Image (cartoon, rainbow, N blue to C red):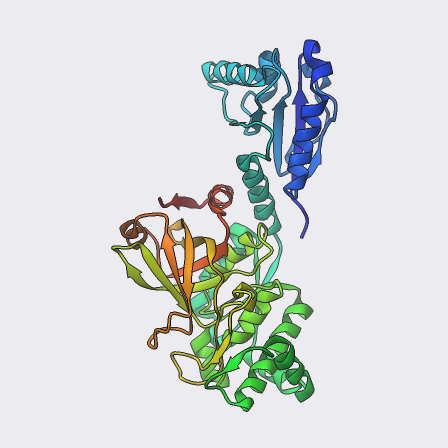
Length: 422
């Protein structure tokens, strides 16, 4: 996936030009260390006439780096009416100049920028989030996602498919379940055996039979083959109709695909699919979509459950258990020992377009609830449980780390209303 880009423009007064090469180099290096491609002049601009002729709209973010004091007039001239970012730091009178420039622009009602300040110990989170959000929004354009569905069952989904195409430029490719079944039937038994040995060699099999496991492995290989042939960046399926047509549940194949960088989303949840496409731009780890199945309102803990958790999210020493599918009592599902740590939860609705974001900490998994989906994990919320209950929804897309800033900025670029809880 292509790295996002920043056009960095350092400015300095003639009196300070000899003092600022170090801070400029440092600012560029910090952005590059954050995985961002940095463009723009390496020497500071001293007057407006030196501004480069580059097409700034081609970059994911434009940053004016206030390398020294004595630049408030120049910054005011360059940034009037621009939705750029102004970055100041702790030396060479950078902060006084930035504050003065912001005040002048506000007086002229021409301040539309974002202002960040730090001591150059790290790339400002606001700049990194803005850049990645812009890159992620652009990366959605003209990609294809797959939907395993029979043609006669498409009508209820046509509205969301059009919405994806018209609003996000994401094309949905329907793939007949019958075609998928035919592809599955051609998968050699030895290929299925290789999948089982390579992916589940250390797992504990509880209910499924050997035949169930082989059918699951062939289904995964067929889904993978279709995704690669059609250049699909994510796939989804209406699980219960799929189960009725094929006698198989797609939980584990979707988890395996997610592990390989092709998000697999159950229950034909297109909003969650969109979230996964966005989040995979900022995290190398797979995403997990789960039900918000239980809520402890006193302790602020939500129990997330679903049968399609990617194996790469396991605790290093944890034991993966191979279970049957909870609702149907048949097929193959996963009980994954989810890794403890900081997480972000996101829930998206398209009508109205609303993104609800919460952060927390995954504290426990493999909870042993018999009447819930197989992979189960407790998340201690950073927000009030009542806020989560009143504002969020069922399907939560879980990512490791705090991606709340990124999601808020990505939502704005996509025309979605973002609500950060807590």
